[in-house]
Image 1 (cartoon, rainbow, N blue to C red):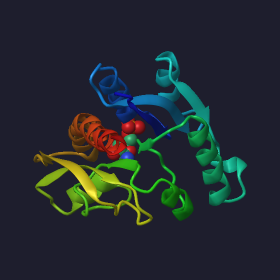
Image 2 (image 1 turned 30 degrees about the vertical axis):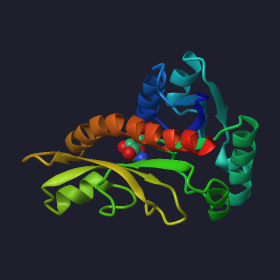
Image 3 (image 1 turned 180 degrees about the vertical axis):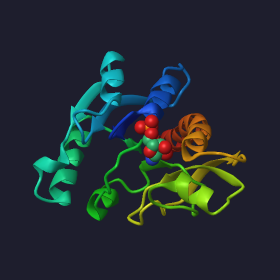
Image 4 (image 1 turned 120 degrees about the horizontal axis):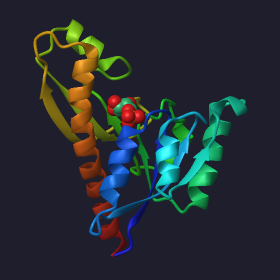
Length: 196
Ligand code: GRF
C-alpha cells in the first residue's frame, strides 16, 4: 500500500499538525506527512516539523500582491512535493476559490466548533456568551464557503459552569487531536480504494 502523500498547512503553534505527524508514524496509517507549509516564518510548529525530518516551507502571503498569486505559489509547491491531500491545521488564511477547485475533495480543515454552529473566529467566546451547554470540534472538507464544506467527523465536549474561553478551548483541543487523525485516515483510505 502506497501511503497518501499529505501536506499540512499551519500558521502558528501547530498542535494539530503534531497530532497528525504522531498518528502517521504508525505502520498501518494510510497517510504520510510529506511537508509542512506555513505562511509565517515564525510559526512555532515549523520547528517540530523540521526536527522530525519533515520538509518545511514558508510562503509569506505578504510577499504576494494578491491572494491568487500567493495561492498559486502554494499550489506549485504542493505539486512539486506530489501532494495528494492538504490538511489545514490552524492555517489562518482563506484559500481562493481557484485553489480549492484544483484540490476538490482533497483539502481538510479542523474547526473548533460543532459546525454549522459558530463558523469563523472566536468560537469559544461566542459559545460561552450564548450559554451553550455543549461545544466541540469538526473536521470538514474545504469548499469555497468558509467553514461550510461537508463535515466528516465531530466530537462534543460539555461546557462546564465557570468555563473560561481558554478552559473550553483546551477541552475542545484534546478532542481535535483525537478526531483529526481519524478523519485524515478516512479520506486517505478512500483515496487508496479509488486507486484500485
Ligand atoms: C485549532 O483550535 C483549530 O481548530 C483552529 O485553529 C487552532 C489551531 O491550533 N483551526 P494548533 O495550531 O493546531 O495548535
